[in-house]
Structure formats: C-alpha cells, structure tokens
Image 1 (tube, rainbow, N blue to C red):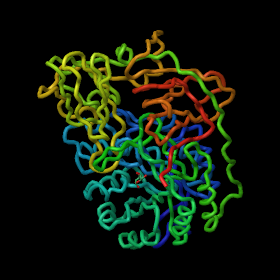
Image 2: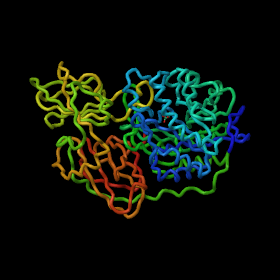
Image 3: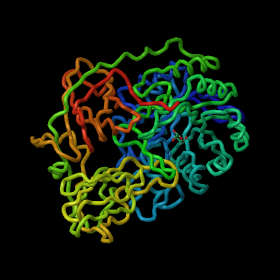
Image 4: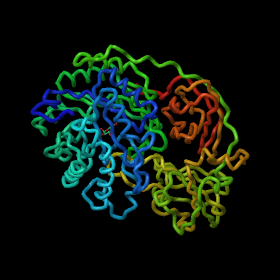
Length: 580
Ligand code: GLA
C-alpha cells in the first residue's frame, strides 16, 4: 500500500517528491494481444506511468450496457500496467475529446428530448453517474492506496474550452469521489486564462495541455494553480490527420527539445501520445469549425511508437532526453522487421442495391428518420418520385454523405465537407435511393451530440418527399453476407468483396487501400476501420494477433468503386504525404 498526495510543490509518493513521467496509451486503440508489448516499450523509454482515457460510448453502445470484454477490458489493461511496474492515470471523462466519435459521449444520450450536454441537467447527470459508477468500480480497487497502480483520476476534459458550468464540473468531481476514488483528482485545460478559470475547481489540481513553450505555459498555469506540482497532462508530440489532408508530423529535434525544456522546469508530464494506435471500427471522430473534417482511421499521431507499435526516431530522442532526468533501462526495443507481403484477389461481389434485404432490416417511415432514430451508421433510403422533367433534390443538412441513385443509376454524391446539399436529377420520375453514411461524430466544440442523417426535409423541387423505406445496414453482419450462398454480377453502388489469405505465421500486416475508393474493411471479422482514396493514409493496420497461420479472410465493403479488385499487403505503414 502506498500513499500518493499533492504536496506544496510536488506530488508526494510515500512522503517523497515524485515526478510523473507518463505516456498516453489508449487501450481501446490497441489490440489487447499487444498491450503488454506497448507497456513494456514505455518502460524501456524511461516512463514510469501510463495514462489512458475511457471511452463511454465504446463501453456503453446501448443504455444499460457496460461492456468490458476484449479491447474494452480496462481492468486487465491496468493489471498489465502494474505488472510492468508502472503507475497509471485514468481519464474517464465523461467527455474525452480524443478524436474519438462524439468525444466519447454515447449517441443514445441525445435521443432524450432536452438532454443537456456537458452541463448540469438531470438526464445528462443521471447517465453520467451511472457510467462513472461502472468505470470507477473497476478503478477503485486499483488505486495506489489500495495496492494498485492508479495515481490520478481526471475530471472531465478541457472543460474550460467548452463551458463554464461550475455546478456541473463540481458535481462530476463529487460523483467520482462518491464512487470511492481517493487518489488526487485533476483537471486539464489549454493554458489560456479564461479556460483555466472555467475548467478548474478548487481542491482539484489544474494541469495544462500543450506541445511547446513549456516555461510560458507553466507560468500561466501557475497563476491559476498557486501551489502544488506543475504538470503537462498532454504534451502534444505530434498530431492527428483528417481525410484529404496531409499526414502530420513534428520534427524529432524540436519535439525532443520541447520535452527537454519541460523536464528541465521540474514538471511532470504525460506524453500525448506515447503510442496512438488505431481508430478501429467506426470509432474516429471529426472536427467542425465551419468545415466538417472527419478524422482518419490511423491514430499514429507521429508518436514515439508508430501505429504498429514500432519505435521511431522520436522514441530514441525522447529516451535520451528522459535519461538526463531519470534512470532509463539499458535495453532498447528491437527495430521493426518488414511485414510479410501478399497479394490476393477480391472476389464474389455482393451488391447492396441488388438485394438490400440481405444486408439489414427494412422499415417504413412517413418522413425521413435520422440515422440515430434507426440506430445505424449506414442506411439505404428509398422512395418513388413522380414529377415532370428534371428535378432538383435538396436536403437541409447532409450528415455526412449521401450517394444518390435513380432507378439504380448513380446520379452523384452530396458531401457535407463540400457543403453540398442539392443535386439535379435527370428526371423526376422513378425509384430514388440514397445511401447515407455517418463518417464520424464531431468530438470538439458545440457540435458534439448532433444527430446524423439527412437533417431537415428532403425536397424535390418544392415538394417535401415522404413515405420512405429505410434499410438499416448491419455492418457487423457484412463479413457474413456470403453465408446465403449467392453473389451478384458487377454493377453500381456499394459492394462487398472477399478474399482469403494464406499465411505461414502470425505477423502485423499493412493492407494497401490506395487503389480502392471509399469503404470499410474487416480481417477475420474484426473491423479494421474506414479507408478512402483521399488519404492521407494508404494502409490499414492489421494487428498481428488477428492474423492466424493458415487461412484468413479479408472482407471489403466498397461504397464507391474498386477499380482494381486486388488486396495488397505491403511491408510497412504508409501514412501518406507530409506537408513541408
Ligand atoms: C486536446 C484533447 C485531447 C485531444 C488533443 C488533440 O488536448 O484534450 O483529447 O483531442 O486535444 O489530439
């Protein structure tokens, strides 16, 4: 049993000053078979702590559910951290930002009329309390004062960048305390006066998030946190990418110099990220500051360990810097070996528009429902239209992309990022089909919690279209589509393909997607995430623990067009062009 408290100017571990050298590693972005490997590599870089967020919406896809299986086994993750001799920081939100869908808030929350978002409102608080009790019942026995690794628990996340409801913030802290958390609590804010003022709480240690100019940032933080240790809770050593943008990197020398300056000041640090990992499945978020920009699948972050968990030059540079301030183990992790390469043909296409009933369930609606009302990420909407001549189709808000078909022929795409909300149909008569896709919920700012789908009315000329049939596509069932036995002739619209891949041994693989269009891929039933020809990323990471000696199955759902139905697995990550 140890004792960890906040002293006048330091963290005190059993009465002695203790500097936290932490690295961010999100268990939900790494295959559990690789957790121990990544934690060990953190130890070898000289870190003494691992920090993780907890994503509420991943654990609770439906109200009343709290899933802790597989990649969501927080208890096992913390156990492995302890087994490696490291400490832990847990940041359960309820809001986490983190480039994660909706900043971690479950979409089901927002089906309650009048529900508050990150403010003291009864429905929101009831759900928050339920969630925090579930998470913290895992964390409580793993606190340092109970023999576990957990040193700190964070309240909310950069709240000062969002709101100023002190009653809310205080009540989140009280819920955390009432759930039996006895270790010190912290908040984090960008080091800007008004954010620190609105996002902090008396009795809770304020920390900062920044990637440069440590001395100046800590001076700002100090003005709001007159005593206690200084800590950068998010030392940004890289950044995330958006579809269609460059791959972000930071200079190794500059990042190392910034870390050096931070450590020279005597402060504690959490390196964000130590290892970013992957937004597997459909978990990535989006930003929208006037233009909607969805986040890519890779969360490489240009971190010391790359997306596949291999050490980069930044790893060595940070290790060297840390060694100036703290003991670092002699051993250095082995460099990455090139991955085995394969090329297989994608076959047996099954087309959504040919037989949607195989893909999900149909329902009828007088007016167009949202994707939230249908509890789906991808929906085929259908209605019959009947007006003279060419006709203008307009939609209030497209969230986030709608592929338009008339009598089975593609007419075009309405894309939120382009602010497209109207398209001319060549004629006003026939079967209108819209395939509507949620590309990731906004995770920062006032748009968190907004509904997905075609929001507002869908009109043909001045007439509001009614009587829709909706086929909610069950994405989890896509890898099982072939069980029915039939395949289709090639044609337009979303199409599922599959290939089998024979491998000799289990190893990480890098699936090249740059010759494909836009879609989603699964490996042995596990959803690797989205791909898009816009890049920047040109590979999807296939974690080694998913790959089994012998036959493996790859399934690809191409929404647009697969010009070359070949799946190539290359030797290494390809994260795309870097802007100089
Ligand atoms: C902020 C948030 C993090 C993350 C980073 C950017 O600091 O607190 O969750 O979104 O920005 O990567």
